[in-house]
Every structure is written in structure tokens, then in C-alpha cells.
Picture 1 (tube, one colour):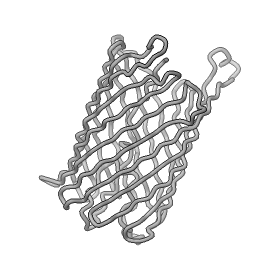
Picture 2 (picture 1 turned 135 degrees about the vertical axis):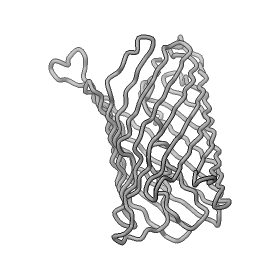
Picture 3 (picture 1 turned 180 degrees about the vertical axis):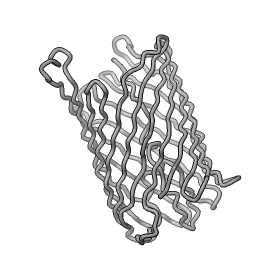
Length: 324
């Protein structure tokens, strides 16, 4: 099985949060894309747009493969609130990959996401949202990946206890030039579906401490082609602390398993994330995150394992979260 390695980071790290001051014990972090913020004033003075801009750097070392370095420049990753029920998410980034020992550089990939969202407060303790998401990834040689998600979600608040759940069903397709017929402009088209489900619990213990746990399960339908089918499940306990000099820190640990292909070979993995936000001005926060991840190859019965073996990764994410 040829292992496909995706550039960039998971969706959990891709969007800026509103950093709304709700007057409650809620501590918001950059990356809280599915949290419906407190009910907003739709007046002209209300700040409507927030976004992250910065750099994500990832370095991975595999047991049987050269070192890989990837760079993602995030130009815009956030959302614009239109009124108390509608907002519009938008992402634009570009990524490159370098491989040692000859430092071969793969051409860049442009990533573009649009996601209009409707969200509704039913009561002070319950809200829900519905969101279609369009993702387009274009590589320099002309290959293009598309993804259309249908994503609903709901969240419940009981005193200091917060529970949210989201799910999505994904329609994916890839357009790529056939190397044997590229002169005629012919393309090979792949199509497949996928789904995921997330649940998140937060105890808003105080204005300076929140803690909780989240879980994710993602997969493909049983009839998926071997090249596209995959499963991934994980849990993530975390704690958030607002401390000195208006710095907010989250420490979390991700533990999970992923597998794919004909024989469901994959990896057992764990990761430590140390995420920090620092208020610089009324409208700007600095973001500095670091992650270490260990992937241990889980090889089941089948033919020879063609993977790169065990893999360790180090990732940095730095930039600004801007609210206007």
C-alpha cells in the first residue's frame, strides 16, 4: 500500500476564534471554529470579522524515508459575521513540501475554503448550526481536489458544563491529468465519500481555568475503493488556563489510531500540543503553538508493507489573530 501523506494540519487547527468576551467562564482559543459564540449585537459598531494569518511549519522523520519539511502560509483563515444568525467562513493558504537528502521541493498547493453558516439560539442553553463547506486544493501541475461537506452541529450549556456535537458527510472528487494522455487534456477523475463525528465536553471551572475532553471518529462507507477508504478515531483531554500578562495557554494530548487501504494498515499515534495566545492590542492576538507527534506503524496480515515505517513529527504554528 502506498501511504498518502497530506500536507498541512487538521481542520481543528485551521480557523481563528472570535475571542468574544461573554462575561462567562468560557475561555476561547484560536481554532474553535465550531463554537457558537454568545449572542451578538448586530449594530454597526460590532466587530464582525476575525481571522488568523501566519505560518505553519512541519518536519517529519520516518523510519525508512527521507526527512520531510512542509510549509504552509496562511493568508486568511477566519470568518465574517453578517448578522446574529449568519456568518461566512473563509480560508486561503498555500503549502510546499521539501524532501531530504537532496532537498527536492514539490510545487506549491493552493487551498481555498468557503463555508456559509446559519446558526440559531433556541434558548440560553441550546443552539445549533448548519453549514455547507466547499474546499478546493489546486496543485501547480494542475491536479485539483474538491470536497463538499454538509455539516450540522449543536451545543448545550448546563451551568459551567458545555457539550457540543458536530457531524459531516463529505463528497470528494479529484481531477488529475492522465500522464499518458495529458497532451489531449484528458483527465482521470476519482470520486468517493467520507464522514466524521465529533463530540466535545468542557467544564468552565472558572474565568481562568477550563478543562475537558473531545473525541472524533472519521471514516468512509463500506463500499469505498481500497485506494480511498480509511478510518481514524481519537480522544483529546485538554486544559486551558488564562494566566500572566493576559496569556491563554492550552495543553492537550491527542491519542488515536488511523488505518486505510485493502488490509487496513495504519498507525497508532499520540501527540502533545502546547498552544498559546497573547493579547497584543484590543484587536490583535499573537498565536504560538507547538506540537510533537509520534506515529507507530500498525501492520496487519497481508503482503509486504510498503509504508515508510514509524514516523515522528514536530510542528510550529505562529501568527496573528486579528479582529476587525
